[in-house]
Length: 304
Image (cartoon, rainbow, N blue to C red; front, side, top):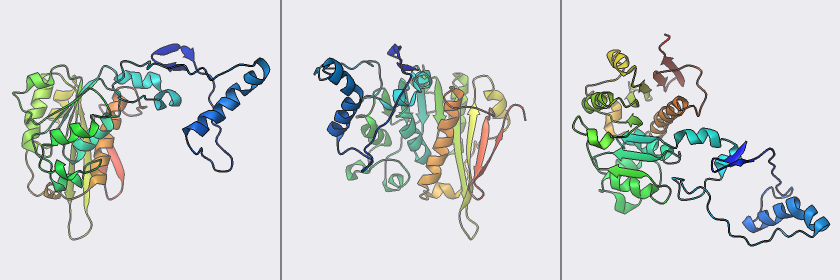
């Protein structure tokens, strides 16, 4: 396999790991490098008086990386070709609530060229209980846009967050977007957003969650629905997403269910990565439901 997209002429045919037998781990990086230098270069040093300690400064090769630290694991895992499929992607995340915040967290670690996130609301205590990352007290009361851009600004480039409500007048905000995630919990807001995205021919995944309690434990359903540029009209006509507000939805009471928000986000991101050829796709679902009680999912395809 090629070492990386920047070094396609360097082909890796073998890899190995050699950890200490007694402790199972190295004390520090110095010990690790010394051990590997001895294993790899030792024979040449003994036979040919070679010297691997050249003190050469290695310049950063991947100058186009969106990450502010070197991504060494992608090449190590041998998936450089798969990760390269995201390089030209411009993603929009509309809504940074419980599920949207986790979508952002996952996509921030994906090598997409640009991420635009939108949410007009402010960050309060209940948000901290269903969002990823640490909490700093001075974040409370700030806009979600301000909070989340600060959390990832030391990790990657190409992330912008805007304290803005997306509706039919926001065409300019979505120009150039190649894929979007709709993570809002109000059906009335969703309707305008879906109409805008469809008018701009932007494919997107809409997420949803409904919870209820009838005297016992919580139960509910997680949903992801994919609208492609070609089939969006047909999916919309199926009535699979709620376009009106449901006052009886227990989820709307800000119940703390970070694990369900994270799962809803994971399903959406996995489906997106399937569409881009990163993950295998056995059934091309455009609609997927996951029930909490039995931990089972059911999906719909164009073949159904």
